Length: 77
Image (tube, rainbow, N blue to C red; front, top):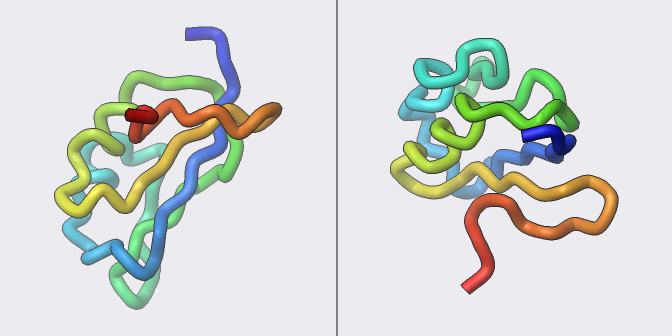
């Protein structure tokens, strides 16, 4: 993919399903409140991180390009 991504989890939406930690265990962790956090807020583009964002049941994960904020996921409509 070649890009860098900024990964964020909206704590107001996250329900702690842990789908992201199963799909991309190196990229997400659950805190003591059972809410997800990216292990690194900015990272190399990675198919597993995209799959984790797509697999989040409440769409709490967003991915943008750090330079211009262009959305990677969810895509603009």
